[in-house]
Image (cartoon, rainbow, N blue to C red):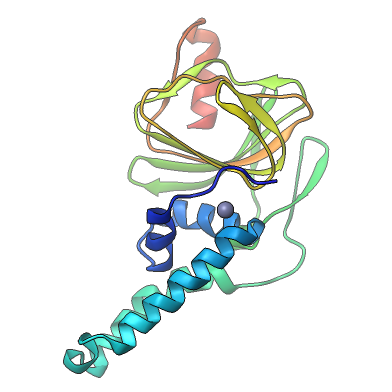
Length: 216
Ligand SMILES: [Zn+2]
């Protein structure tokens, strides 16, 4: 059962089309896996369209403005509705079925370091890097923190860290300098978004930096 969800503020920003692509993908994928957030989002979207069509703006808005508003929301809508079968990626000896939001990324290229494999998804959103990460069974990421945020959406398998044990669909947002060392017993596939490099708490940088560079 999914225990970790995006907060209300993120659901609203997603529904309004205000999130950058990196986070919009995570929200779309979580909503696909989480009935609870899908229902909340549907409510927010109904409310938003109500506000738009019944509010005072409608009297002031001319057709051009409305059209522009619709056009500027188009990419987000596309992410949510494009549906093609067979969105499968092969990594770590397994085939994984990816949520709809990942179908726009063809030919994911996996590279690896130890138990960790990474396929970069977004690299051009200022400091934000977004990747699919696969960690093989018994794999661990040494204790680290981030100067910024780290979002992990668990797409398959499970892992644990100092805060708890996570299941498929969990949306884990870590802000600030909290230290953690994720470990997976049976292996997992995640979507990870970070806006700052990993800072390893202990261990030799010579050994750990290649791993940090792979992830961020
Ligand atoms: Zn949820």
